[in-house]
Length: 292
Image (cartoon, rainbow, N blue to C red; front, side, top):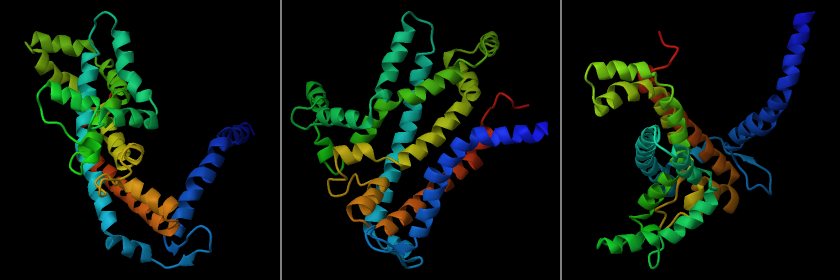
């Protein structure tokens, strides 16, 4: 009797989350899976076309262009964010005066809304009076058209992405503060310097947070949208047309909901495959505190 009451209370307490998940998570996913096999413009009825949308994807040059742009962005932005975020966390893990102030300063940019930071960086990358070109000119280096250039628009967006490494930095800091001091003391007894302690103690002991940020970084990079949508609108000449931006265009500008649903499920499968590969190749090399 007591057990059945506990079970009832359990389901009662989780029911808000369960209802929310079914209505706003699982329900739309099942609906979009069904719509990916149809041709639907939202206004009229849906027409079943089987795998027609997926066949059309393979022959769509903008689909492949958006894939390339997204992979390019992910391949550069994720490693750079991991390295800069980690090095920043190591620096901010030292004991100096006003360290809490420095941590706050470096974390604050990650709290700025994406649209606001995009507008700010549009000014920074402005070719004629932007701060980026002003700094290059002061150093007697060649300037650039940045987001107005086909070759520089993606690097510009990657540079802008480093603005928000503070989010990952906080997670690194939490991991760094969990490294036992006795490990460093043992390394010092063995004659290890700063670099040796970083490579042989700090990085292995925090590999679980590095792995977490790697997975979340790749998932987030494959869904990059706001900055390219606000700053370059996918241009020039589709050079910054990322995958989710192309999905958005098909869904809400061209009203090709069936095609957009197919794009969404392809993206889901790509992210799933990348995540499984990361667990396969890196998962066993990660140190967890509860390991034997």
